[in-house]
Length: 296
Image (cartoon, rainbow, N blue to C red):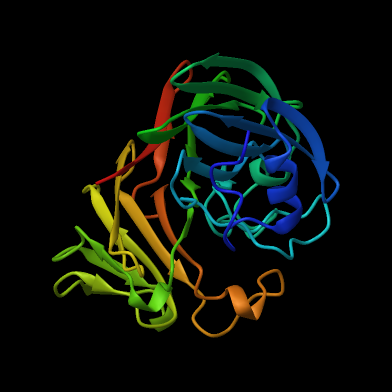
């Protein structure tokens, strides 16, 4: 079977080669990490068991919806791209301790279940070892030819209330980030991390023209408009359990694990619970953070 999205620059060449050689489901090694590859009539996806991180998704016949860097840092560093899990905190921890964006994205996860049908797949994952004294996360991924849905479910198994933050740090593959816009944020307030985390109000729809690092206080559905040579691609991005939407792009200053030639090939649109809307979870409680993506 030919991979539905093994072409294009959104997928590192080594992963594209592995995907093209996959018929059905296959497990392999990539850059020192165990990955699960699925290539079916409905489409394809690649999942890293480090971080329970979806690295690639494309419905059959479509260009990839997600982007992954071709120059990732060596394991066990976090992988740049796909949908990293920021948990149990987003950005830096309040006390300054621990790694940026928490432990989940560099931890080892197990694939607990893989339910495959002709129309799509559902994957269930949990950490190999406990990541927090009281909180326990799990991940559910549903994919088919029409949509991608990812759920980060946090259960409180301890004795005292816990506050935490989190994000689904999605890297969307685009033709040119500086030609994109994000619809649905007009009138929303946001913290601009490039301007001292001061608060502003979004005037009109958000056009991407350079470096951005903003936390929007919004739970609205969004549309990522991605102009391409064969016409606009419009991805609907809806979410649950989140009142923050993070929009990030490094502009012309690539981090070390992004090739300069790939700088305009992605845009981060994230469903999050940030310092604007932290989650307080009582013992026995559960919180669902979900993001669902469909093509309009």
